[in-house]
Image (cartoon, rainbow, N blue to C red; front, top):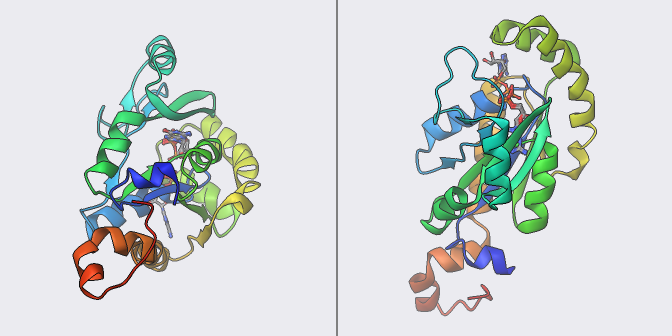
Length: 217
Ligand code: GDP
Ligand code: ADP
Ligand code: 5GP
């Protein structure tokens, strides 16, 4: 067990990555509705809010100068430039949620997932694939939140993002939404059954049964 994982009180950290429009935000929102004990990290971004997005709900929206200042002050666990905008994950918020015993989800791009994997090798990483590029484009158009130019840019970027799918622990193809959601929920439940985690969360029961397991604690 790594140093980093020890401080998580047995909580799990998940990263979920996908090309824009593959369905990660809808899947994560549905997963949290099913299991409200999960926490979603709210990233900082310099991207302007889309219609209907609220500061502090989808993102902490900020400007480049403020983002760079936070970056210099070491506020981010990871950060990346995606589609020309800065995105970053708050260190205090994520570590606080994990220490409080909450399984935590990061909805971040492949560059961020790589940084998180390096920091916390026990992170469970999931890549969401669309059934095809044409379905991806259809979903972006149907979502109706981005201009034609932005959609074109995101479709071009999808190729690059998908090239990194092999770096992830799990891949889910989001063809049928409910099926994809069930698979995501199954990954979370599987992580919860890991013996190292069960040993931390059920210390007394393990002691009663005399189960000796190295948890690193
Ligand atoms: P979406 O792809 O349609 O959900 O569009 P967004 O503008 O919400 O996200 C753009 C990209 O930034 C996606 O690849 C996200 O996974 C990524 N992203 C969001 N937040 C973060 C973050 O905190 N860190 C990193 N590295 N990437 C992020
Ligand atoms: P992302 O967060 O990856 O950019 P979204 O969650 O915003 O993607 O999904 C993009 C669009 O596709 C949304 O309008 C969403 O309702 C729709 N969508 C997601 N999954 C499916 C699916 N399995 N079948 C049909 N439409 C879907
Ligand atoms: P959007 O701007 O469409 O919400 O997100 C675009 C991309 O940025 C998505 O792939 C999303 O996962 C990624 N993203 C969002 N927040 C973060 C973050 O905090 N860090 C990283 N690395 N990527 C992020």
